[in-house]
Each structure stands twice: as C-alpha cells, then as structure tokens.
Image 1 (cartoon, rainbow, N blue to C red):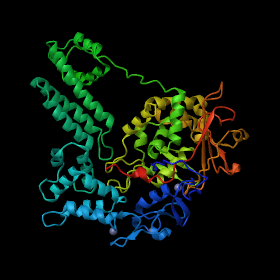
Image 2 (image 1 turned 180 degrees about the vertical axis):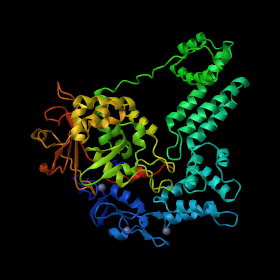
Image 3 (image 1 turned 30 degrees about the horizontal axis):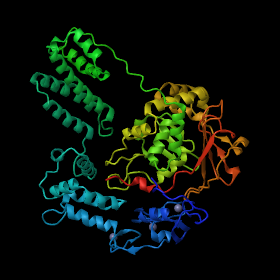
Image 4 (image 1 turned 90 degrees about the vertical axis):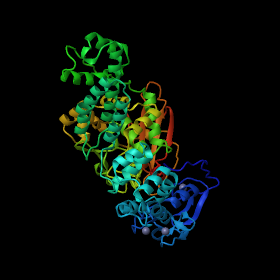
Amino acid sequence: MPRARRRQPDPARFPPCARCGQCYPGGADNWPEGRVCKYCYLQARLRTGACAECGALTSLPGLNASGQPACTRCSGIPARFRCGCGREVTAGERGRCWWCVLAELVTDVLAGPGGKVPTHLRPLAEGLGSMRRPQSGVVWLRRSVTARTILQDLAHGRLPCSHAALDAAGANRAVEYLRCLLVRYGVLPSRDRRLADFQRWAAAKLDGIGDAGHRQLLERFLRWYLLRHLRSGSTTATPLGHGPYQRAKQRLTVAAAFLAWLASRGHQLGECTQHDLDSWLAAGPSTRQHALTFLSWARRQRILRGIELPVIHTEAGAPPPAPEARLAAIRRLLLDDTLALEDRIAGCLVVLYGQQTSRIAALRISEVSCTDAATRLKLGADWLDVPEPVATLLRHYLRNRGNMTTAANPASPWLFPGQLAGEHRSYRRLIVILNQLGVPARASRLAAWHQLVRQAPPALLADALGVSPDTATRHALFAGADWATYASRRSSPATPEYEALPVERDHHACGPCPGRLTVALCSPPPAGEDHRVAVVVGDVDDPGSRVDRGIEGQPARGGGGQHVVGPPADHQQEAASDAQW
Ligand SMILES: [Zn+2]
Ligand SMILES: [Zn+2]
Ligand SMILES: [Zn+2]
C-alpha cells in the first residue's frame, strides 16, 4: 500500500515529482531522474532487497532502466552512509545497515551455551539474516517476547525441537509463525497446520464433556469418521482447507449438543425416535443440521436404528448485491490506493470476473504470464487474457508481491503469499474485504456471472476466449467457467463518443510504467440507461494511443452522470509487502 499522502498536490507551488508525477513538496532534488517528492523519497529510502542490476542485497532507493528497484551504486543515488559490512545504504540504525543489526540480534537470541548458534538452528539463523526486508525481522525479534523466549529455549536445549514441545508452549499466532519458520528452514518436519489445530481443539472439546458415555461415542466419531475424512483430504501438496476444517469443528460441536439435548429429553442415542430428531431440526437454528453427519455415521454403526434422516438442501445464500453497491465496490477496488493492491486485484477477480475466492487465494505465480502483448492468468486448464485495468494492477503488483520480503517467503510459489511460511494468503481475509465494501463474495460472484451472461451467450463468448463453443457453454454451466465472460470485455478501438466524456485530465505518469491509465466510472447512470463502467488505457495526452476497454456494458458515452477519473495504482507498492510481524 502506498504511504498515505496527507497533503493535496499543489501545482502552483511544487513542480511535478519525477516518480509519481504529482506536485508535492520535495524530498530530493538531485536524483538521476530529477526532483523526487517527499513521499516517493521516503519510500525509496526505506526500500531494501536484491538489486535488479547487480543482485546485491542492500538499500534500493533507485530504479534501473526498466523501472525495477536498484541499489545506490547502480542507480547513482547518493548513499547516506557505508556500513561496516561494506554496504552503501540509505537507511539503517546508528550507522549500521539493517542486515547487520538483524544479524546481531539473531546471533544473540540463537546463541547456545557456548555462545555459538547450535548446528541444527543455523539454517534458521541464515534464513533470518538474509531476508529482503531486515527491518521487519528486527521489529519482530524486538517485539515478540514469545518468539525470543522460545528461540532461546531451543538454542539452550531447554525446549526439545518438536511440534509437541511447541504445542505445549501455547496456541497463539506468535508460536504458529515461529513454527512455520522452523518448518521452512528444516528445523522441524512439516505437518498439516490445520489438521494439528483440529486435533488439539477436538481433544480439548472432548475433555470438556461431562457425560462419559457421550465422550466415548464422540471419540469414536472423531477417530473413525472426522479424522479419517480430514486426513484423506490433506496431503503435503494440498494441506487441509479452511472449509473442511471448519465443518469438522461444527460437526463435532453440534453432535455433542445433540447428545446433550437428547439426554435432557431422557434418551440416549440408541433410543432416539423420529419424533426426537424432527423436533431437534424444527426447533433450533439451521446449524442443527450439522448433526446429520454424526447421525448418519451412527446409523452405519447400527447405534441408531429405524430413523429416517432428512435430506437438507443447502441454502441459496445472500441475494446478489444491488447494481449500485456493485458499482461502488468496483470503483473502490479500481481506484482506492489505500486498499492493499493484492486485495484490489483479488477483489476485482471476484466482482468483475466471478472467480471463487478460494481459487484466487491459491493462484500460483506460475499461473500468471506477463508479456508485452498480454497479461494472462491460468484458471483450471485454460490460459485467459486479463483485461484492463486489472491487467495494469496485476503488473504493478507483480513487481512487488506482498509478504515476500521477510524470512517466511523468500521464494514463494504463490501469487498472493501469506504471512506464514510456505502458505498462500487466506481467502477469508478477501471475503472480509469484500464484505467491508458491501459485496458479499459468493453473491458478488453470482452477480458477476449474471451480468456476463446477460451481455453475451457463452457460444458468442467462445470466440473471444479462443475456446470451442462447447467449452464456453460448459464454462457457463460450471462455476469455473465464469471466465467465459471475457468476451464481453473485448477491447474496441477508441470511439468518438468517448471524446465527449467529461474526463478530468488528471495526468498520472507512472514511473516504471510507460503508459498512463485513465479509469472513468459513470455514476449515477444517465436517466433510462444502465450503469456502466468505462476504462481507457493509454497516454492521456495522446488521444490516438487510447484504447477504450469498456469493462462493463458498452463504452461509456458522455452527457450523463458524474465521472470520476483516477490514477493507476502507485507503482511503489512495497509498503504493502511489509509483513505484519
Ligand atoms: Zn512522487
Ligand atoms: Zn546494484
Ligand atoms: Zn552492514
């Protein structure tokens, strides 16, 4: 997320910044690219990582010819000081670079009885010491008492190196974060985090059940049904998902509640009557149906007899959001620089292109392709073009993926790396973001799909997609096929109508990105017309370069509504990648 810019740009007083193009007070006048505003200066000075030119792990205030972060030597930007380790850096602590500060801290924390880091902890020490954003590591080790204590105990042999020992140390986020790091650097073997979580939770749950008979029964259900079921769905390659984990918890909780409820009516499970079951389902909240898994298991075990189990259809879910709410959400996702870029991209994929949150969260970096000709994403078996303006957001994002700069994810395969080592981002966070924007994820997917189907039948969409009509129709029928919709966003040449659009000429040059992006959103709609969103990509100064890519409906026409023009995402997104340690 770019740093908040509290001041309004003031072209009367300040010349435009060479990086962001906005007229803010100055930060540096003599950088190779010219005058840089104070916001861009601060961001550049604090940026660390591997130089795109020489590969050195150091301060990266500069940009190389293709706009990638570069070190002071390669970019010609003056360094603040030279650290004892030889690095020329623009920020550090008391004359030392962040790597040296971090290395000292790590050695301090991981030192064993002889003052040396024990052999088995050395890969961890090296991993921590070579993170691309060492400031985060310093803050983490200074702030997290839990992490420091556990690491010291491990180094001194007071705590055995095992998952069980960490389990005993507590079940909070600090411990989990550390566990993932220990796994990442081979200090601990890997294990399925959610499965372990579930086992721990279930053991505590069963301990809290007073009736010995109920406890025994639920233990059997847990061991022979729930855990078997969860283990069959969890492998090293695909760890247990949040959905199955949550469902298993609910099933055990509701099964326990059912047994207690039945006992209050004077019955044990074997004596449950159809009337009991019907009253249970009729009298309580819909979550009571989660008892059916337990009951059908009990029936297979012949504990329960002569009972008819109802078939429950899943609910239809929330209704699709109103067009106004959807448009407002699209506008925010495209234009609001205060939202994290990864949230904006993922949100667009849901709201505009009807993709599933869980699938978006688990996209791999190998499933994205960016060339001069096209930005493409692989969903399922097909590679599909990502239209503007989401493609521009995606390209910006790819230059600086989130959560990559700490020791947790030095080479994450995920497009959206999570905060825990080796994991992708949580799709629940995305659902929360969309909810905050007023568009529930599932309902928004449906709304996107309805919109797309209204605009063109699958067979027509097939052409633009480069797939057979059969494939497009299949896509239309199944959830994964929502991409068929791409056809509706075929780019069309700039139209004269577009020239009439009262676009506010907010010139927004983007440092590393040669093009400029104008996003025009029309709201409220002209009387008698549908809402529409129009996007124009190209140089704002050069009408000939503009390509209108209406992303919803036809290209917007002038003469109605209030038009909002926004800049593209700031190219300096590294603040978004600050892990929240
Ligand atoms: Zn600037
Ligand atoms: Zn360099
Ligand atoms: Zn140093």
